Image (tube, rainbow, N blue to C red; front, side, top):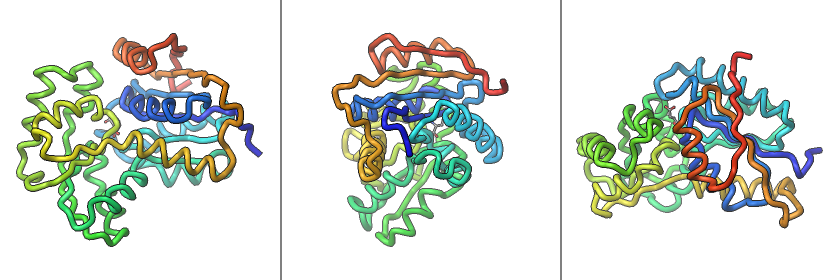
Length: 271
Ligand code: DGL
């Protein structure tokens, strides 16, 4: 039996998952959140599946020690490489969510028979995880995917909404692999931070699909169905952030996203 006051643990390799954590906090303001940014191992997208699995299990151990009721893998690369393993590892101790399934369901429902683009890390794109899950929906979505490995480190370094990010984005999006798409999945949780540059590149002729709200809504519905949501809706959720390596950009982004005093704790994963 879970304590309804128990926190929800959310993790990513860095600031990307904050886009998802923000959507969760907007939708579920009464929930307590723990956030882990594994900045020491960023970028996950360049790592092997087994390395990402090892980091994910260590982060989940911290969350389980803090008695979370749910874990949200707010990273496409870790959702790709480690979701099944984490789910099995965590078992009945907490509900486990990823950022891919809600987006796949959304695209299958809203873009059947269409050419849909996907950008993400090498890990996510190379695994074909979106393609496989979309194929299983039998909706005739034709996925055109491109790995864009420079984007997450660029964003993590604070290069977004400026001319450098706009030009890197343009370089990638001009690729033949994305020709003729009607919509584009942001298959990395860092990318909502450059959504404006992407929309500008397409002159708003392509719909840019950011998964954060879809993911937050899917988690809310499932926790609600399981009677796991905080019952005292007047409660103001408390947030605790952990980073495996302290970075200025993490602290700055956390303050920008959450706009209030946040607790930021350095928590080296190898301890
Ligand atoms: N934000 C992560 C994702 O959604 C990955 C960025 C990285 O560490 O490579 O894939």
